[in-house]
Length: 163
Image 1: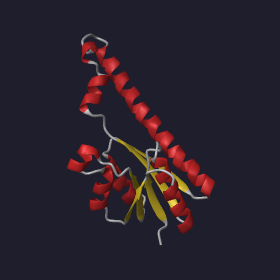
Image 2: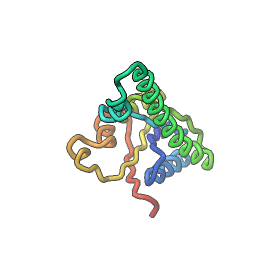
Image 3: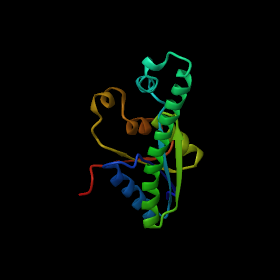
């Protein structure tokens, strides 16, 4: 039925249970997993923290700012690698083929949909905490945005942890 399941992951906390459930589903279906971690572009406040305005005056401020920005990008990449390693190890333990994809500088929704199309995934298995908070209620969560925009089936898993 499904042969290539896209599994968005941040590899952290309760969502590890969602990752595990997605991998078990892939195993049961004989499908491969395409694990994806998307890190967003840095926000205005994040950039201001990196570019501490007090240090932006002087000859070396440009180099300091570039080094700070590179450091932040490296941290995003390190975060993504850890998240994808969690999925890869779970896949290996379950005998499921896994392809890892890291996408930087995209919104999670756009990145997930882009990878699903590029990798010809036929199902998106996405976990949600089920607690959108004020911003999620007002503007929609990643899961609700994926549901409304995806051209392929989406399976939403509540990642509340093991029962």
